[in-house]
Amino acid sequence: MARVLQIEDDPNNRRLVQKLLGAAGHEVIEAEGGVEGLRLAREMLPDLVLVDINIPDLDGYEVTLRLRGMPALKDVPIVAITAEADRDSTLAVGCDGFIAKPIDATHFAETIDRFLQGHREWTDDETEFLLRERTQKIVEHLEKKIVELSETNKRLEDVARLRREFLQNVSHELATPMTPVVGYLRLLLNEELGPLTDLQRKCLGSVETSTQRLRSVVDTLLDVSSLETGQMHYYARAYDFGEVAVSALAQMRPKFEERDVTLVERIPDVPLRAQGDPDKLLRAMIHVLDNASKFTPIGGQVAVEVRPEGDAHLLFSVADSGPGVRPEHIARIMEPFYQVDGSVTREQGGVGLGLAFARRVTEALGGGIEISSPPAGEVAERQLSGTLVELRVDRAPDRPETPSP
Image 1 (tube, rainbow, N blue to C red):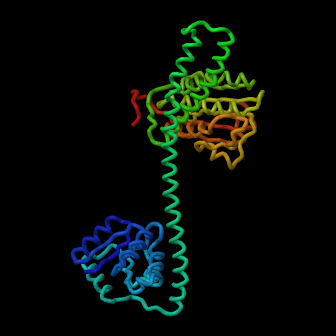
Image 2: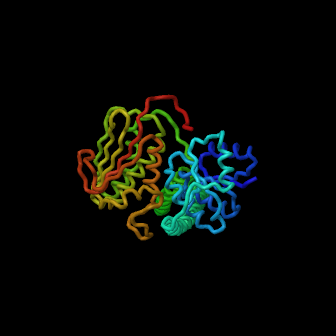
Image 3: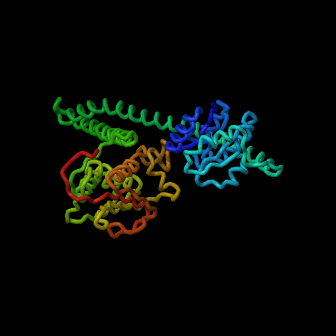
């Protein structure tokens, strides 16, 4: 009985070889990729290696070159099994034979036995040997780099998982004590616990403003945490896209007035019926408007337009007269926590989650987000100089209100 190492990513081919060689009394050990195959070859020292040319990480040519560079395996027969390989190329890199796919099940075990008994289909000359020797060193270096990258990628995946868990835990820990704080503040301001002096009311008003800001950050953290862990639930119900935009503007209008920013609006009077989750869409619109208010200088302008885009989509566009965004930052500002100025002393507040949330929500609603700076076109008949953010969602026919899966 011989020990055969099969390096093949196709499970059907692995099962076939296992069945044919197992029936002939051989032990077959399987590897799905090149790096795994090389590791098993070093550990088990097989009597024969079957290698497919088109396998993950290192391909069959590279695996063969690397095997031929291992002294302990220099006499072990290597047979290529593939439908696409060039027979001369497989022999040139060090294979002892070539079996074409699909495998001839009738004679396969017999062919393998011939290779185990010493049959070879190539003869080496000095030029081929020198070429192979140099290439083996290249492949050895490549193998080490692939292993390093695989280990680094695994560590990055672990870090990403830990970040998601940390974000989720911190968000909930912050949200829990916020509830009684908000409740007692409301009781005090409503004078349900006794009358207030003007100074007390002013102080509590400042506390409430700061609390609302903190609550907004916590809510956004919870939203992004839910998105990253795949726990965000969306609902499908009929709503009016224009009405959602009007609500978002109503909530943000005091902030624009506080900064003396002129707000130019263009929202159709006709219904813009859609199907989806208007609550999350509302929060996405508010995030975009909040960004515009923060980055527009005092006395500047922000233009907002709502319109249908063909029969399939609806568009919410916000342009500002701020400083704009450099091209290299446009894609990254939609990533969670990324900010062009990430220092704690930056002029604008926020934690860099608004656009990330808006992007995830609009994608879940069948659309997406696009950013151009300077704006790619007019918004509400204004051509501003800063940044244009466009939220796009699918426009679906009405259907009963149901939570999405």
